[in-house]
Image 1 (cartoon, rainbow, N blue to C red):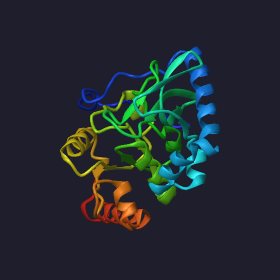
Image 2 (image 1 turned 180 degrees about the vertical axis):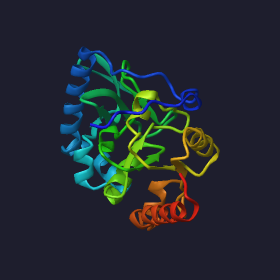
Image 3 (image 1 turned 30 degrees about the vertical axis):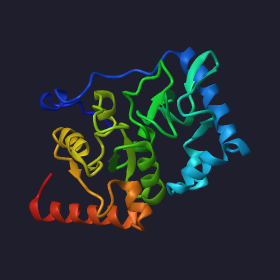
Image 4 (image 1 turned 90 degrees about the vertical axis):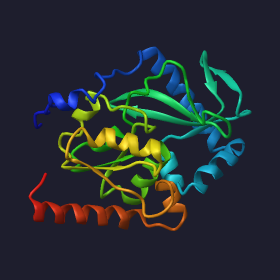
Length: 249
């Protein structure tokens, strides 16, 4: 394969040091939890959670491919599964590079909305395996937005996420982006989203900001009738036109 470029000094200062997946024992137990949660999601007990996910615009095919699941219980509750404390809610496993890095859980209510199974490493890049041999990547602010973008426009861009606007990209995952000539950043239209997007944009001219025409984020845009494919395609068309006219990147 092609040699992997390393980050320039100016880029390294904005990156976290390389991250590693959790110990094998944690991964083994966490994947058993993921399997159990998947089964529950597709059972009668999981129907409310499945309806919620589909209400956000995700198809059953997307939900299955992402291996989303459900741990039933009050939104404030935790359950003991495989010897680990697990928050009740919709489970979102972070698989990448033949490892399970973390299991995030989307609570039904309360703050914070997202918890995780202790011991996971959220310094990953959700959807990183989608980047192989891709020339265009799209950073979204959350997992559901990334899944929706992949579902609607996966042939245009590999959709990934750091899971929040405050998360910092590690050098391990930056290296996975070296073959991408364009990296679109579609963070939420708020102060935190702007700050997080600017942090990514400072890494390289290849990172380009893109905002949804309406709504706060990709999910809002989709639910308001927006065409995600057309939006991303237009952004890439404008990008190609800019390259021809201005000679960058």
